[in-house]
Length: 342
Ligand SMILES: NC(=O)c1ccc[n+]([C@@H]2O[C@H](COP(=O)([O-])OP(=O)(O)OC[C@H]3O[C@@H](n4cnc5c(N)ncnc54)[C@H](O)[C@@H]3O)[C@@H](O)[C@H]2O)c1
View 1: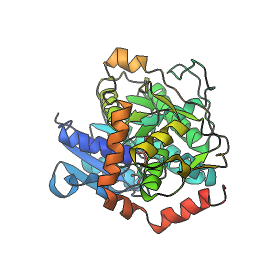
View 2: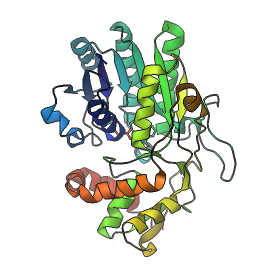
View 3: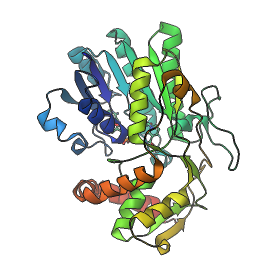
């Protein structure tokens, strides 16, 4: 496809998986990664393409800076924008929510305005199932596109605000926007503050695995590659002004995930340490993804058992990537979050 795509947040976990797939499978002619390289952004995630593939352009910039945003649109005139960039970690939003409002809300508004000004064909906003709030344990209830928003954390509230801005742009200006609301992702290149890479990292080192509360928080895990394929499909064939819930019917309590990781890394359960709960912790997320499956023909390809085993192997094989990430900033954050939660 002879198109230029801007991928914001393309140096982060999901964005970089999206970019690598886009280049490997020729999804478009040129990919412009627009990323501020916060603690979560990492140019290693874009290798080897960054050094060797002229279809990939990296632009360092802040989605919440109007000048940076205008320049990347003026320079590259994108046909489509895939907006992944965000402050993405709930625990950090509880510590300090200001960067979440700036990046997730203001950043989305500036990008939407620039896309209108430069007549970008489509704006795909990558959002989360957390905008819907929480579901009770042991119920058949699931999130779906018609469910009212009810975000609990500052992170979820900022993502919900971004979604509303995108929908308002559709209704007010007729702007072509599509939103995807996805469940928890796992896979390679995920920053080790999130549950699965954190547990893998600690298990590999033989360190304790901190599990919040009773460990019975349920998430609907999807492999990042399945999410990226859904985002692409919605970005190409989704109906303008619509939202699509993306999930793979894989509900798992955190403690079950942790035990699987211990098994896959050859460690025993004595490493599990229950710690004080996250404030306002959502009990359960589950997605009904019938709409994207029936209307666009998407379905997940990667089975949970195989996907998790491959993810553990990836972290074993990429110890250098992990070592380079474990910077002073991460150590400080980890100590602040788990140090007093005995
Ligand atoms: N990780 C999940 O399980 C999950 C699930 C559903 C939805 N999402 C959504 O998917 C998107 C990507 O999530 P992720 O897990 O890859 O996040 P991530 O934290 O790994 O990466 C975020 C990226 O955005 C960049 N960024 C942050 N602030 C920026 C700014 N002001 N300007 C430009 N770039 C900035 C970072 O440098 C980083 O590269 C987010 O919008 C998130 O809300 C994530």
